[in-house]
Length: 177
Image (cartoon, rainbow, N blue to C red; front, side):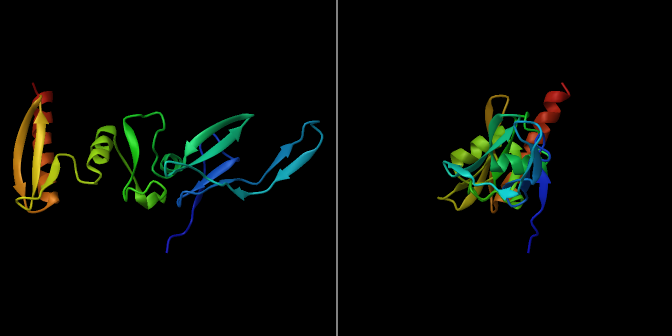
């Protein structure tokens, strides 16, 4: 059984927190009312998520400015140390369910991997696909614009190993020129 852990959202510390389950709450705090002499306590409250094509999002407010954040990005930023400014690394839902924002269901992958997975609609490693006719897993790679067939394998893991080995060879060759 997992325990729900809450952590402050960067740049919204003391205002909002996100949990490892993907929930967002407004933190209890004291605010000054308009005439600057009265104080008011805002109680802690779990925020209601909006739904956008299956993705949950939350509107956060600070200094009279609002911003909308996807739940999975907030969880990744806080629990997976994702830099929100790095557009090359994206947050992927392992089970392909965009409303499951539990940290155990999220992983950081490259933008390229995300595109390949969205095309395949699967979570196969890059360079691997299933060949129905032969009932095997095929590995291919593109090196310097040329497509290379790496072989047929009994499992996707073996096909992925062949891909990763060839990728490493290609990178070493490119950088050692």
